[in-house]
Image 1 (cartoon, rainbow, N blue to C red):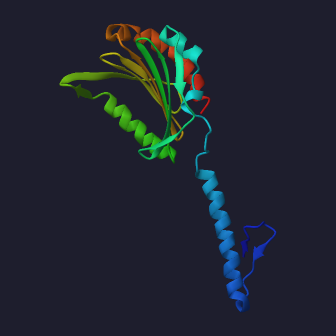
Image 2 (cartoon, rainbow, N blue to C red; image 1 turned 90 degrees about the vertical axis):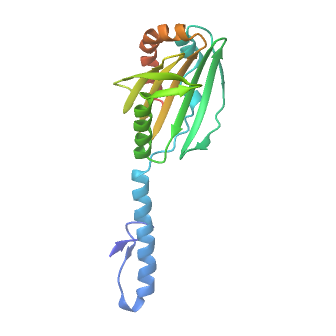
Length: 199
């Protein structure tokens, strides 16, 4: 005996004289069970996009100068994920926020692990070697790390459930960017934790 998908009060009773009717009823029951199981294991679809995670005032305070937002609520498919991005800019400064949503938490975690591993490798651009300096950051989502490129970029990369987001600071003055990193990271931690709560 199976519960019909139309409600627990409807059951599928096997009658050898009405086998087709039983199979039709059982099929509805199995479809209902499958739909319920999918709802339990599938991540909730979020309306949050990158521009929702930080506001101009917060990032302006972090970057040490007034920034203007330039973004939209548009989402784009990319490499198995759905991504949105938002930029906050000022002369000689750029802050970029990228939010990536994957079909499952396992896929997001795999992408995080690849990013975390690759961030510590030496990169070569125009035959110049760069290295990301990386440190894990506890208390931000499921996992997070902060990074600083040996030039002018720094940021925080966060995993939470089936989502990843990257808060990236870019300073035209490489020396100033490197010197600002410890203070920038200290100031950014509360803002990042607040952003994590929004996704």
